[in-house]
Length: 105
Image 1 (cartoon, helix red, strand yellow):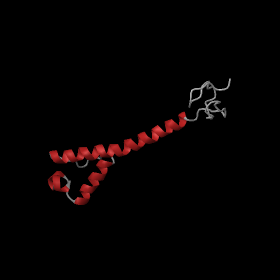
Image 2 (cartoon, helix red, strand yellow):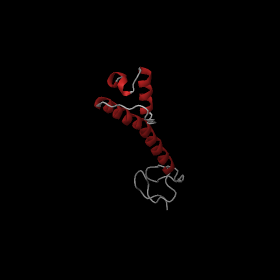
Image 3 (cartoon, helix red, strand yellow):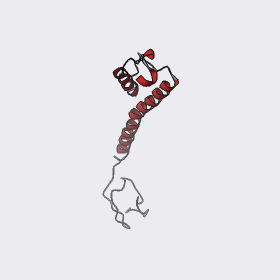
Image 4 (cartoon, helix red, strand yellow):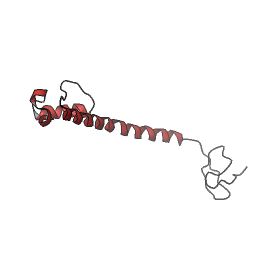
């Protein structure tokens, strides 16, 4: 950003530009310096989308896994299917989840 924007737009040094990149990537966005050139604004847009992606994608993955683990807590029993011998059927299952045969009445 130091090379793209220059000192006249607030990017007075490379460390200051690195600070801006970190603030933008983490989406904190204090707004103390902002790019003014079209190329600088384009770079800022890419960095912001990347920052949101870094936050949103892992959050979505964790939330999905937590939801799956809650759904998998359905009570099962030890009844085995007489046809295919699979076990761990749901508590009130009438048919086998594997082969579809009727379970023991």
